[in-house]
Every structure is written in structure tokens, then in C-alpha cells.
Length: 205
Image (cartoon, rainbow, N blue to C red; front, side):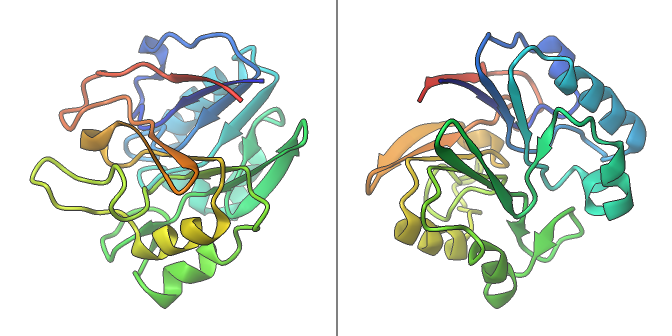
């Protein structure tokens, strides 16, 4: 099973070559302002991709997905994961768009108890975890060296130990690493100046 994974495309999806695969995963910030026009353009593009399964976890720029009434406009062949999961060929996927902090972004939750309620929903048998935010201390540094990942998520990941943890959000820290049996991938395609700098992750599961 081949996974094609990307994040933080910010309306530049038409400029990104997408490899063939079985599952196409976008880990958030498909738009920049979260408007309907931006979102519609992305959804039309995403739903037209040939991959058998298409999974979308929104990001902090994707305001459109916060309103329940808007979710009816999502094409039926896109699996939108907002604090929910799905199983594909015996593998358990779970997705959540929540990010820590107090700023006025989409899917924003205060650090501590508030955001922990979302991570508590992640099942113990999760194989592939998809979040927009990275866990604290793992591929989460901005250019100044400050770590912006989520401590509460890091605690949960240690307990669940998924095979893969896919995320984006922190453009500066795109890359991969491994820790306690989990492979972590920051899928951000753009740098901090919103230039395309990376290719989608092409991963055989």
C-alpha cells in the first residue's frame, strides 16, 4: 500500500506534482485564508486525484471546515478526519486538526486540559496518526529555534506509539525522524516564505 502525503500547500496545490499511489493524505493548511472559493478549488482538485482513498485533515488556516453546515459540500470521495478515524486494508488511521495556543486560528485550543480532551480520543490501536500540529520537541522548531509543538500530544503519542505520525504546520522543520518505534514526518511542502521547497512523501506501508 503506497501512501502519498503532503501538508501546508496554501493554495499552491496545482503547482505540485502528485505521484501515483493508493492513499493520498493532506495534513492541513490546504488554503491560506480558509474562504469558500479557496476551499472549493482545493476540494475539486483533491477529489479529482486518481488515488483510491483521499484523506484530509484540515489545518489552522482552513476556517471553512470549522462550520458543520459546510461539511455537506465536501465531495463524497474525500475522507475528512476531524477527531475521527477510519480503517483501510487492516490499518487504522486517525486524524485531528487541533493546534495549541490562544491566537485566532482555526481549530485552536488552549494548551493543557482543553486540547488534551481531543488527544484523549485517539485510540490505542492507531497505526497512522495524522495531525496538523507536531508533538512538542519533534520537528516543531521555527526559524528562531522556538519549539511550537504540542506537549499534550507528545504525551499521547508516547502512550499510543503509532507506526507513523504525519503532520505539518511548522514549515521550517520539514523532514523525518524516529522515536520509540514511531516514524515522524513533517510534511510541510513550503518554507516560511511560502515557496515550494519539498516534494510529497512517497511511502510504502
